[in-house]
Structures are given as structure tokens and as C-alpha cells.
Length: 121
Image (cartoon, rainbow, N blue to C red; front, side, top):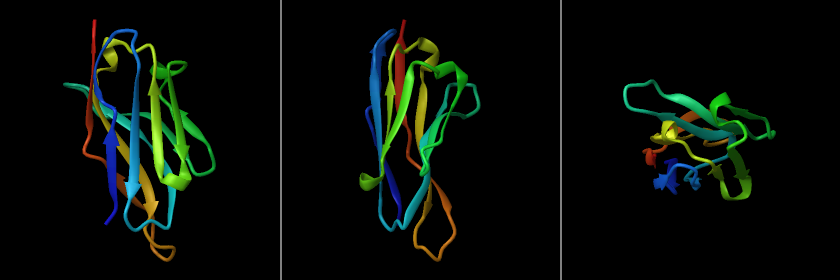
């Protein structure tokens, strides 16, 4: 019943920018956390950046100063502004959310389908 719909991926030259969006829809009582993970070829999936309902932000050191995560809780949407992109940022980016469908239900993890980000040198 809960879906995460991503947009904004694509091909960009090194030094360029992209903005990813992820909107959650369906039966949602509250969203505890939303964010982004990525998986490059031959590597494990890693956290990129997350933001909690209280505004706490967690991000990987390699994107510090280049990526900015933000949210719009009224729209159940999270954004990832990616600037100064590098070839090593190339990966499939997955939206992730921790959502309570109904107030009497436990939180659950949800994942988007993934969107490809390719940075050329």
C-alpha cells in the first residue's frame, strides 16, 4: 500500500548537478526517516544521506559539502541535491523510508525501485 516514487536520475558530466526526488504515497500515518542509499557496480549498498522526522541528518563523508538532503513532510517527499558530481558517485540510487502505516502499527522499511545516476569524466 506504500509506494516510493523516485525521479531525477540521469547522465551528467563531472562537476554537474542533479536533484533527486522521492515521494511516498499510500497508507501513511507518519514517516520517521527518509533518505537515500546507493550501490555502485561490484560494491555493497551504502548510505548516502538520511533525515529523520526531527531533522537529524546523517550522511557519508564522501558527499559532505556536495550533497544536501531536505524534506517536505507535508508532501511526504525527500530531496537530494547533488552538486560537484564525481565519476565515483555513479551508482543506482535508492530511496528509503521508515514509515508507520497506521498509528497502531509498527514502523516498516520501504524501498524505491532505484534510479541510475551516471557521472562521466
